[in-house]
Length: 106
Image (cartoon, rainbow, N blue to C red; front, side, top):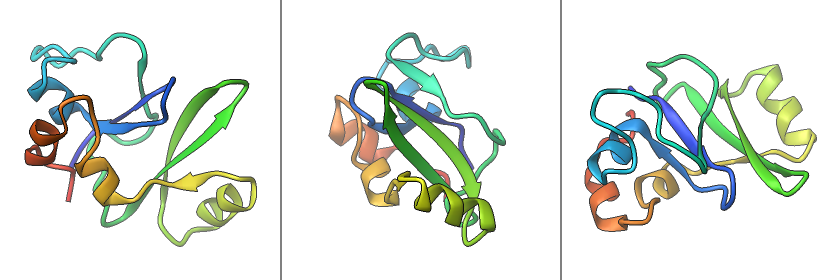
């Protein structure tokens, strides 16, 4: 289970645990600084039930969590949102090898 963050400049998604492991987020549990922004939703989301979504708007990326196969998920896809693949989250971050070793929320 995880809390997800999006890099508003690149659209890259990572978990709080991944960001803490690479030193981007403080180990105290506080949110990382810019350009990382917390994706609003439950703090214990699992990618088994939740889809991590992103969309570029006005030059920045925004993120959302929604239940997979729900009406909201369908609506976001129809409005141009992209579902972020779990493998992409596992491999994301400036230190790919470190982030791939951290848990993704499954």
